[in-house]
Image 1 (spheres, rainbow, N blue to C red):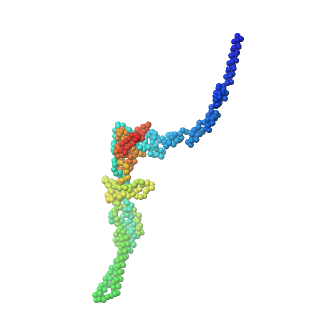
Image 2: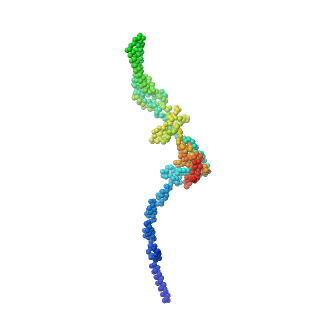
Image 3: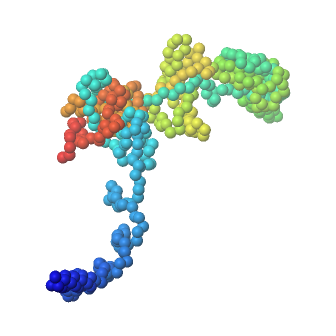
Length: 500
């Protein structure tokens, strides 16, 4: 019994010692110099600073990063993720959502920047043509038949240009004749405003003291001339009688010479007075008993008469205008930038259910209307217009000419389709019955149903009818936007897939 109690107490003491030793002695570990240690000094984890020194301090240094200039930085300024642009530059800007979205809802990946926004507009359901080049797409044979497509080929030949200008017949301002007082005097009117007159019809008469004076001078000169001529005749008769008896009279001879000189002076005065009257009348009328009657020089219509009946006028004061109703010309307008230098024209109008056409001379006014930015166009027919033609008659001027069109081919108007703001032509790819190419073209103004275009080949099979329906048959939207051609056209017009 004593032995058992002893053993129990011994075991309890031993266990107590072991427990105390375990509490006092930590686990063994190895220091940096290789020595083993049982000390519990809870050394923190070491790290290396930027200068290469090792440190066990816990100062929670943030992660470092490199700036664009190559310097390393540990600041936490939430720099966004970088990305690389198409030109190779790295950018951290967040410009998501800048891709252009078409009105039809499909996103467009054409490379057209903000400055090209106007060139990208197209109606809903239309294919996007931005970026240039050909757009290749496929249409089943069945769909082609339902569209009733008609094909043709571009036509070589001279490129003509044309333009139609609408206007009316007017009186050329230069042909309106203004009648004015040929001399001061009393005027008697013989016509009224708006009255039609014939050639040679009396318009007005004028009684002028100046004309009366000139006529009096002429009459007196004529009488003096006749009197002097009679005196010279008498003197010459006396001289002959003296000469018959061989007698010479020097005084008589001197008288004859003096009288003859007076006759010459009087005749010269008559001639000058007559010229003055002719200049005054200027072929406009006829003198009769000192009354000058002015007559119409051509057929026309009496315009405005700014004077009253029986008015006293000074020389040069306006009396009336006569508008020539048969000397009409065409007047229209074109844009200031239109070049008509190489154009010729034909005047066309309808009158009494009959069509008339006239050649003539084209003239473009140099002045530009500041408001409308247009220039006046005149066309003078080379023949007399029909009697029924009138001022204000509606007419058109058909202009034709030639233009520099090297590299252009002629196609029917129906072959050129407008997609957005672009002109395109659909070309059927001969190597594939279900494939088409939508090709952008450059165009010149159409003439007589043909349009000069650049961008096609002479042997291309183009869609000349049904193009407007075909553009809406091209798959668009929901990822079905046609992709740019994965190939190219050769000079002979054949399409080649892939690259050489």
